[in-house]
Image (cartoon, rainbow, N blue to C red; front, side, top):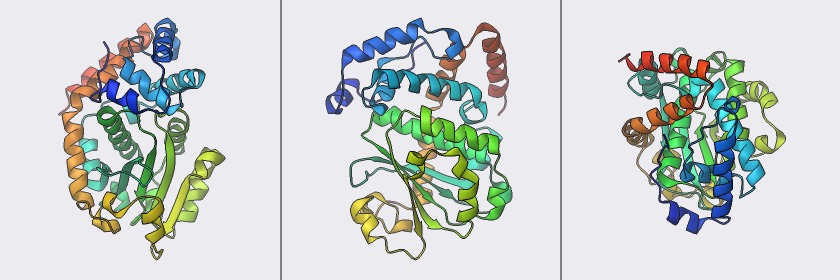
Length: 301
């Protein structure tokens, strides 16, 4: 069953720098003929396809590769992409420990901004897997509502990150995260800004650098706690698009986080439909196992 998204298709395509409906039609026809071993649903909507097409700047072959990688990653990382329900216990904990938001404002270049930081800095309460799940739910919610974008900026506040957090990171989960974010996510990634860097930064870079290609690593900009951010406000993200915690005029980060969680809660039917669409695309035996697992998790309250 096709999964609908909220954004307006005609309005979005009219504002895109590259668009051809014939390319969208070609991509839809391609998905319908794909073998099930690729895990790609045969009923992708034009809106779903448009996100990949935009992310790949209208290159049809790159778009095909991105779609295949997207669904392969989601199949192989259920800890990130399955059972995206905020009422589950691990998700309740994550909402108390972490903060996320797709900010209401834009960057200086008109890009969307996804924000993240720790709310509770106790390492024993931190889980990378549930944190990544919430991060990608937040990103998916932004795409669901706003549609294709000229670019995305990830804004991470590192304040409170300690060595204890790093010791709780699984290398396998880290590898899955970077494969998806670099090869499968349907956005134009423009920059990653890390504010309030902590002394543990060197150890963190040592851990994550092997999973990043040079182009992705070069997108990351680090800002220490004593840095004058005036240049950042003028060239990257204006004060009008930042919370007061970072010198801006938006509501505080906890208020933004609570609003974001409310939006994710309202999007539960979408997250459920998206997972069901992926399950339906699996080969028969894998589909039966996935449906049984999904049904069991829905019974947990």
